[in-house]
Image 1 (cartoon, rainbow, N blue to C red):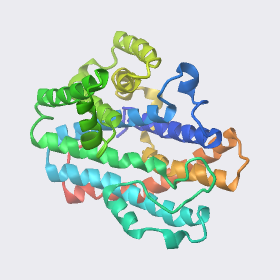
Image 2: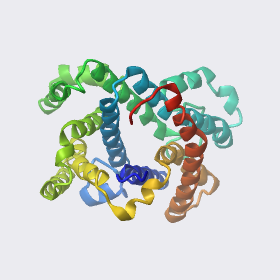
Image 3: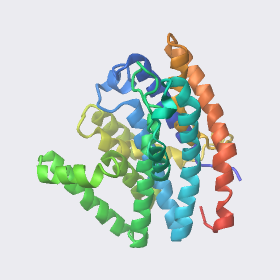
Length: 346
């Protein structure tokens, strides 16, 4: 069956944007040549733009998954099988195949195996001894820090689903409207007791506020907005408002999932015949995202004088190969276990 919707294409593009963004900062060592900085002098950059929309789409699809089948065991197993295998293998490759080549001689002597195992269970970005010495951001795979954030959002949907906030749509809306209103009002009026409580004890310990907001907006669009997607007047208004908000550093992270989210989800749910062949292809966006960082860093390490164009070309092609490897040898085989474990309507 041909998938007529375009989530596959959008996620592929967003993962590719993340690679382009990382390549730029690796070579420039700053954000000043980022497209959003050049156009709008914005606090948002191409990497944040892409991750915000990743979380938006994830919220839309995960809430849809729970809405289709609210079996707790099925939901949790599906999320684990989708996230953990790819993350674990990428962590192993990053730390034990790439790390020794780009670290110091005593790499394994300094390696903390307990932290590594804990990181696998908690989906925490791999922590290694110093790697890529002298480079900009000496981390083996910093992209992976968002995976833990995403899984926490999955668990939040599960919790809210159990208490019926997802099925009872206005319970979902009331909960999150209250939650974010308190945070945003605290920020606007600089109420330190509120901002400190949420930033130090609630949000920062688990998930970044912008990611959870984007995830929530995606879920809200699924529950309330589907009938209103692809309305041309709303698309035009959303595009205008989004452009205006890019010039406001204080609200752009909140505006992007709201206004930009409408445009992205409208495109995602639209049937476009000439894109149908792309939607037959495997979804390698997760693999591209997992391996893009170490691939680019390794290429720069081996070719210190590499230019932007060659780095983008080499890293993009290698990321596609690793994405295919991750999909066919890791992600798809584990996803095929889903029907054997439990029947779920996706």
